[in-house]
Length: 73
Figure 1: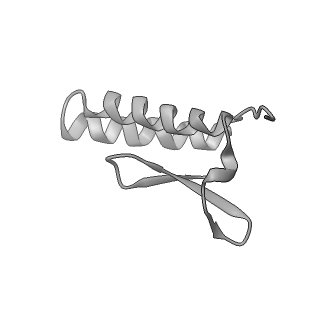
Figure 2: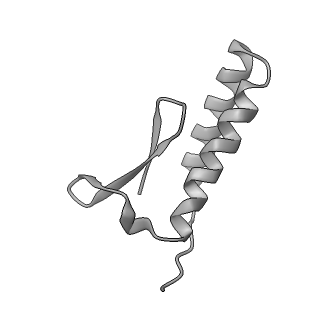
């Protein structure tokens, strides 16, 4: 099986941090939980990114579980 390497763009890291900060303001600790789940889901792309559906032309999305966000790749 082919190995893939996830590269997170700087703007995506900024977005994740802003969302993390927002959740921490809403409820202490929730931002840390969001960040943990988001990074775990994004890193799951290393195994097989093709298991995720194409949503827009050639763009696939992975849902960030328990949060209303998707990572596009």
